[in-house]
Image 1 (cartoon, rainbow, N blue to C red):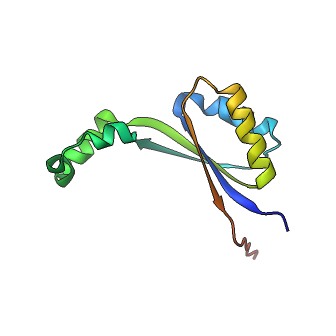
Image 2 (tube, helix red, strand yellow):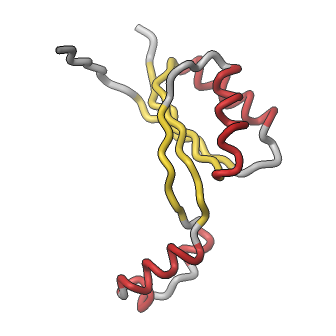
Length: 112
């Protein structure tokens, strides 16, 4: 049995089209998108304890300092995940992106 992974690609909002094109080149036909705002570890580690304890200050920092980004997710075989990563390295080598691969233990679809 071939192992499958939840492949999640985090990209800046401006690179969503490029990332989707790369996934299409790899043969991916179905995926989900989730917009979010994120703080890089470099920005986050510079926050003081006082800033983190004040929830209004946290919201202000997220609003002002965070980056707009998108998670593109799909479930693929491990071999396909490697192909996507190779294409990302080739075609988006000058852009920021992050990949997370999470092993899938079971998929059950309930149909009505």
